[in-house]
Image (cartoon, rainbow, N blue to C red):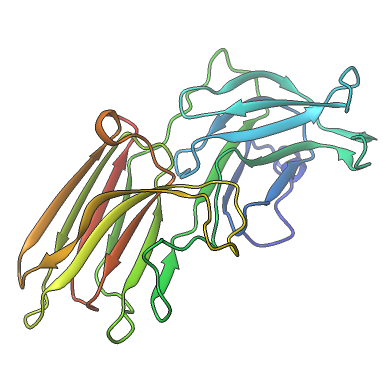
Length: 259
């Protein structure tokens, strides 16, 4: 997102019933804040992130901070105050409402099959959360089905291109890939990754990778359909796609929280 980030107090002063923080994550340590008190929090419809951490000032807590987690099926209804006078301890930062991703993200991740000369591109995860200024007896907190479409890929000559797409805890994912290259087969693979807290500079990072479709040639004008479902394969933070040809090769991905 652009900085400085939008201020919740400006939205409230202009008569809005809510403040919406809708932003792309740029690093695993991104933290945002709200300088306005509210009466409820819910995941926004565009969110890739499944869980959002929210911290608020509490004078009775040891470190003056309490924390809640908002998810696709768990909004928060109740008053949360942004304390712009008191400070958290020991950071001495203003006691505003703090917001950050409850899911891990690592833009330095590299698949274990990645070799020198390969290329990789990340679709940045989106964090979308809504803070309500007016009282509501209940809140709906749900992510819409998310769709991604790709067609051409910057594959280095003789190497592999990897595309990393966020899918935090989506329960059903439909993948359809068609090789429209009239000359060459395209070696296409799919894997799921669960990020870990790890030192990416080490020779053995701790990220967990699961092969969903082993890289294999897709013939000219042939099509591949892959279904990723939580009961069978589990939940992932991201899907990793691999290609050895630039295309054209349409790839359509539809993700849902419903099985």
